Length: 79
Image (cartoon, rainbow, N blue to C red):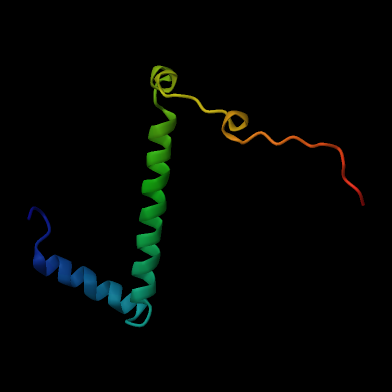
């Protein structure tokens, strides 16, 4: 396993348990998970932003005006 074996990991877990307490460990794990999820999302967004312009030129562009149905007003509105 390298420099850290299972005895080292047990000592680290015991220190974390003493520092934070058993009641706060689930909340701590949840916040670490949420932070990791946000970090992965931001990294994916950065990778998408760094795509070359050639990739964007090949993708079909859609305009909101083209996809919206046309509506015409007759001007016969009465208050």
